[in-house]
Image (cartoon, rainbow, N blue to C red; front, side, top):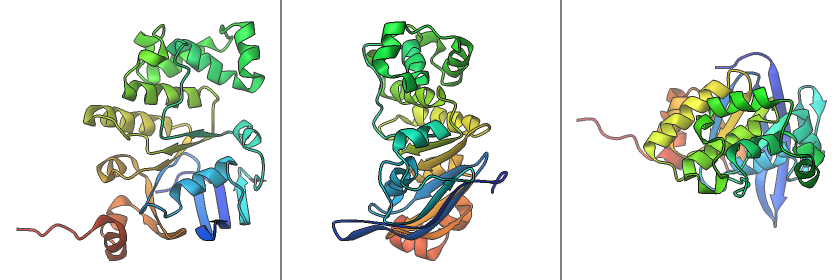
Length: 252
């Protein structure tokens, strides 16, 4: 299911590393207000797409357009300023700062880390950070050092740090890796809520989690888009089951 107009358009993108074609003439679209998930075997090009969109990797061929503006080859920090935010699989927080100060620092990162620290971590957007703390369920941990948080809490904090910059598109790589079942459930609820006002593109392997969150599932294989659609359509496709999911269980 799509919502609104197209926000991100990837057209004919190819990129190779040491002779290996990681993306092969790939085209992909994200829509406003959508929570889309990319699945596929290791080496299918999932994370490479996130790298291309966020400016971490340059495409050999093709174009990337965000909100009507070509961003192909643009520096990653310029892409971030346009409203594309990236969260990597391993949480990257400032362990010696409190949860609340991590959010403020993330929201003011464009000024530079040290300049922000010198000026102090009080901010006129405090109400914005307060709302994020409530959303990620860490309001009660505002004054806790980030380094003491549990793994799942660090993941939620980093999602909050991404939200602090008010992105229009959030890219997330394997958000529930290492989480308990309870933490994964909470993360699914959080991402569904975020998608109400920010498009979210997730790379994930856990199919139960994918079924819970995805408006649309896209299957990558050998650097190409194999199929996309609803979870039910994709999960029952014979080719998808052959290359990624395995045979359907026999019914008694």
